[in-house]
Length: 418
Ligand code: AMP
Ligand code: GLY
Image (cartoon, rainbow, N blue to C red; front, side, top):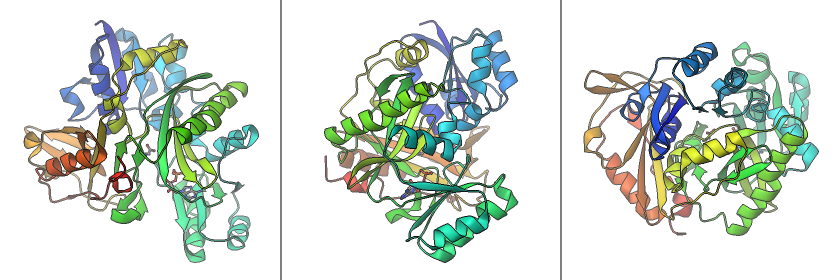
């Protein structure tokens, strides 16, 4: 009961990480930078931004922090883990070089190609004319990805050539996207699922499966978002599919990164798709998924701090999982993932009898206000997904805020399967 932990981040994922650490008998004190209004009930929030590497390293040194758990990709890409380790501190998360598995789509694709990790075929372009020439001579849908961090929003699955051309223009000719490089991929078909594994070099400790819902509206309509809801377990991922994904994708990628001199430590998130030819990679992330973490970590019965420490120290660690189902629905600001209002009061939270993870909120005296695109995630639990869904729906109905919307079909693919 003596470990001091700093969690870096301020969304629902970090709230779930904080709650999981709080359940560990080994953890005495949890800080969160910068945290948010919900996290403040479970950790001491400190006002340092996730990319303020110098201030974070200083805080860790001055407060005798035993372990820093890094949530968001921006902190990894800013080199937070490198800086902490250089100063002699323990950090859970990949180095900046290893985090390129997420921050550069092309780096990820090259690793997969060289090591035979199943994924869609691709070509990379930085010239608009060459990219458009390639795309217009291929079948639709065209999958066009911006090569850089875009918070899950830099991907267009174009159903028409007009849409494909517009996406290429945006990404390669419009300065607002930055340096301008795209990856054009073969279209893969099948249900998607998220397989997060804690990785320590060649050691892979699989976490429970989850499924995210990326599109903004019911029926998988509308623009891609950071994720509108998730559930765990995922019944269509059979033990056989899981074993294949673990061996041919997650373990092979961990080994590939070690072989290439960029060993991975932290959470390797496989965004996978179950095609007729088996599971393939859609994308890798170098961190816990959001909103998947909010439905996966509550199922972990063994000590989360132990797992984090085992990965950092490179030792083995067994995990134990609850068979219960968790299903979480994101309440987002109307307009998200485009522009939206902020500062709108959320009422009724005190009546909710379920875990509520704060994704983008702010406290103003006694009031909780909206402060982001994704605002809250309400997680129901039950002995199966249908029960967890009912629980989430009943609790959401108690929340009163005219500026929020949510999907009503989270978990639909699995409601009758378990
Ligand atoms: P990503 O940010 O790479 O995960 O892509 C966002 C979403 O776009 C994914 O969740 C998929 O639904 C879709 N997508 C990305 N790549 C492909 C692909 N090669 N084939 C089909 N759909 C894709
Ligand atoms: N839920 C997808 C992500 O974390 O990127």
